[in-house]
Image (cartoon, rainbow, N blue to C red):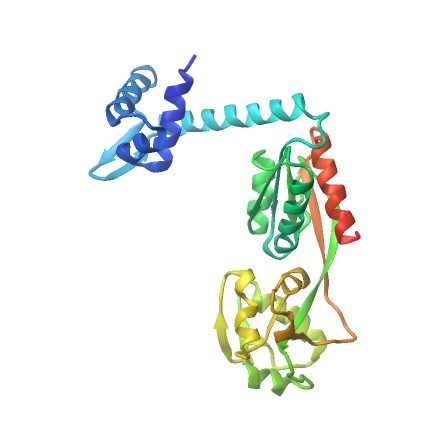
Length: 290
């Protein structure tokens, strides 16, 4: 059996890629880190390649790191099963895309205040990482914009979210030229979202490429700051807009047409949700009225 302390030290070293910083993280001496690595390499062969300040894992090192991760996941699953009868204490991990995450995170904090025994972890991630995080058991719950086609996952409709055309407060948008005059605040999904919505609001328009770009950010929580300052318009999901603090400084352009996306709640199909995860889902759905 591999010494658990040595294995933990190796995992930290593979993350820090530096013996001194690893020793500081663990609160031990650098000599102790080196000794533990020598012990592991005597048992399992060369685990690390060091060239100057660079450090990489050998195939044996990668296999050992994967083994450590599998042990951690197994321990997490055991803890969930041992305490699954407890609905108001223990750990629940939720990973979601950015827009819905901005709406959910304050709600998770509200729930944790009501039930201090709960430990609610949330992470923002793009769709592929949401799916991978749930498949790898790093998070029990995930919310994604795309329904995954994977037999290992259970997916159910969580809520609906429309796209919105957002402009500075007081701006009137009646024709395509009004958007041209403002300029587009772009983001990683901006062109795709704008194309989907504006093709319906302004049918036959010249296309998003004809709009001048007046700004860009990859942080959805910051996307409306330039709009609020009158620097342009953008297209983004409803929950990202509704979570913005300065609502009086922006305006949503109303339209008779709508583009509405489904958000999917996913979890591993092989075992049921813990009772506390079910409680979290029920609370969030109740707050969103979905």
